[in-house]
Amino acid sequence: MKKLVSIPLFAAAITICSCNGNSKANIELQEKNDSLMAAIEQRDASIDEMLECIRIVEEGFSKINEAQGRISVSGESDMNRKAKLQEDVQYIIGQLDKNSSYIARLKKMVAGNEKASKELKGVISNLEKQLEAKNSELAALAEQLKQKDIHIAELNNIIDGLTQENTAQELRMIEKEKEMNKVWYVIGTKKELKNEKILSGGDILLEKEANMDYFTATDRNDISEIATHAKRAKLLSAHPEGSYAFEKDANGMDVLRITDKNAFWSLTRYLVIQVR
Image (cartoon, rainbow, N blue to C red; front, side, top):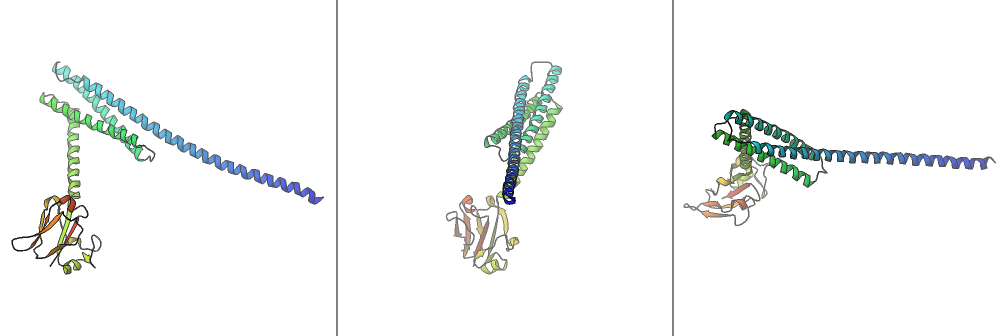
């Protein structure tokens, strides 16, 4: 009889354990669902915030256009004209600052959101272009007022700032272009190139073990030919055929002439010439 009683008790224990197991799995599943829903809600909230920022910026540009439509540089007394100009210019500057702040905020949100669509990024890029255009229109207005001997301090300060920013940007672009156009060349005998660890077993070692101080740096646009001062010269670095030619000078020495700069420097910015 004891055995018969123990069987139902054992089955009940299994059932209880099974229920407890299912309950635990259900809890884990619910936690995952909750986490997923929270992530979706967070994503949706982020997108909603982006859309709201875009709406504010677009509304700001609309208000700027209205203020620009009110601006007139003629037809009223100097006192009234200057007072209204100051009021409208200050309003435009305030709106531009606000738009600039929201656009920066949008860019930051998009940078941290891998789900942001290309369309959304395109909208933000378009808003940036509109901001640049409005800043340019402010600069044109400043010049127009200057010709009529009307000076507004706030506007002049903004234009000075834009001028400095543009100048700095132009300098950065010039420096970047110089860096992009920078090339290096070296001429030497096989022994010299090996001694400087530029050549090893027929392979060129660039920026690894090579003595880079042995190279001459220059701008690719400033060099169209290189005198080798040797009767025999050959290229060791990779440059497309048809982009260069070796010619003899009056003394019978090889001169490298670069006939197509873009093609010549397309594979490498380092030129290695071996002479004998």
